[in-house]
Length: 317
Image (tube, rainbow, N blue to C red; front, side, top):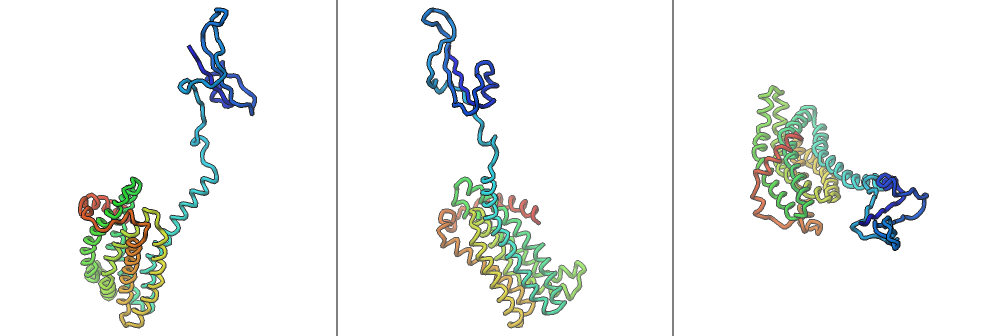
């Protein structure tokens, strides 16, 4: 009957075999002793040294301290923070730049007078609650679906999920557009000032084309975000915001559309952003595996997406 004792300079080994493992001086190498019960040449039973070499693998007892028990080093933490900032920083900037479109438009309308400013501000708030936030929340469902597909290396499913989300959000934009068309009447019924409500209704009617582009934009953003492709979104959003200033100036002051021009500028800028991201996804080699073109597979499981999207929209709304 053979027993093998393995020890190194750590307390674990001494706790397991306190009577058989002697404490060695710090800095000494590992010692391994293989003994067996048997008879010596003299015929006496007892412990007989068999071999000073390593015993078979199946009889070894290894006591190790794992990497997880030692925790994370400072270099690991700094590296992880750097990765998070590298992704989160551009995403924050993208959100701010896309939100700035409405702010810039209202700033231009503010030069037209208090009535125009009040109408545009109320229209923007109404549009956010009834339209933009709803589409933003439902589009966020792609973060879950595309993230799962990307992690499972089912790359083609990212494009399928995005197409399914686009069709759903475009269909949802139709009833929202009807609500926007009657914004003035709705606000008046709710007891708002008639003149301000009329201005708000006119503003939202001219912003209806931007409603459809906003839903598509959310789908494109989530499609790229789940692949950690963030800098193209940052570039297109920055370019769109800069272009939006010029478009607002032309449509508000030079075309004679006034506040209607500001609403139309929001629609134009959103469509420009959508077209640039669509071109990037179609032409860039980074999306070759995830975008395979339009597929009939996107027509399936739409109800499953809607259930997840509604839950996501409720959380954000």
